[in-house]
Image 1 (tube, rainbow, N blue to C red):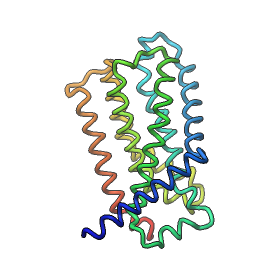
Image 2 (cartoon, helix red, strand yellow; image 1 turned 180 degrees about the horizontal axis):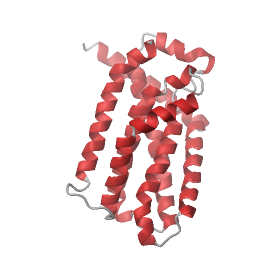
Image 3 (cartoon, helix red, strand yellow; image 1 turned 90 degrees about the vertical axis):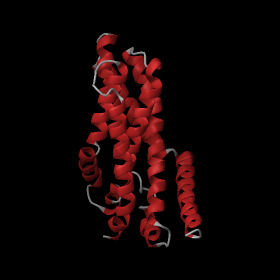
Image 4 (cartoon, helix red, strand yellow; image 1 turned 180 degrees about the vertical axis):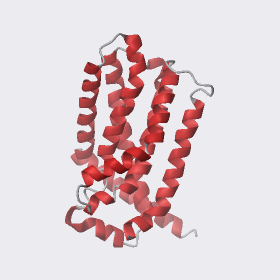
Length: 231
């Protein structure tokens, strides 16, 4: 048992460092997601030009719409590099633990989605004239749980984008319904934080829902990924 753990950690670290280093050099996925997030921000900002009080009710939905599309775009490129020159088959046929590869990819997707939201959130707040500073910590916690939800759901499903036809259409159709609990919890929780919606349990219940979702789908994805890549 003690001999297997370092091997697992070594594979996890190797894939994680490789993907992060490649992304920092090329910035392909991050730049695409960032540009898409900025475009969504400007569209939403110019679409809602009401007074700040009304925009305070609108901004939770705007934030989570931006995460929805940017996150889906990110997970769709999870195995884009491995798809070239049949490197994905070589990765799967290697003796490396497949759950370690998946976990590393989940962490990368989580970091990318959260990075985009760190850029989008203050910009959207400025353009909608909504002061988020007093509630920025809880809101970023909600967005981090949301980014985690997209990572644990979309990363295993991104396998279908490697060789499937029309994967860019198929993947969102599968991911969108599955992440709907995260979206609902995120919008409702953010509204409670901003004081535009009131619930009996406050924001704690929504945070617990999103955390339970992330843990359940994360563990389930790690266990099922072996069968997914085999079949």
